Length: 103
Image 1 (tube, rainbow, N blue to C red):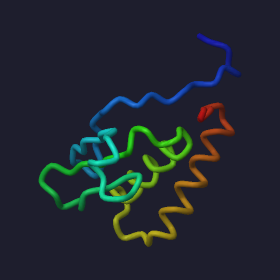
Image 2 (image 1 turned 90 degrees about the vertical axis):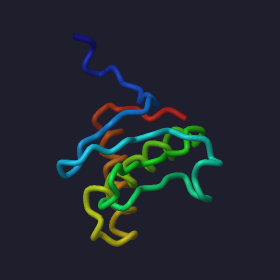
Image 3 (image 1 turned 45 degrees about the vertical axis):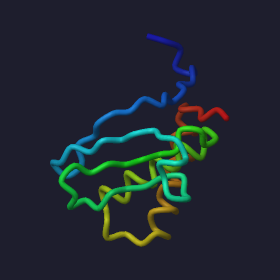
């Protein structure tokens, strides 16, 4: 086991995530693959839903965007304001418990 104060860095590797009993692909992509934003979330009713996050975003923005888009997938009924606020709080909480988000 490592030092409990050791901070972990997030990796940007594509992965799958089960959300509401459905497999989602989470991909880190070029900006050209996203329509003018830092991330996108498919409609949860899509047959093979995906979450896309711009891989060259600054680290904090990348993590925040990932949290934001996952929240859309988990709770599609939430307003954009509620999703944004929740993603911001989660990002700060991760940082406080030792998951340093390096720029």
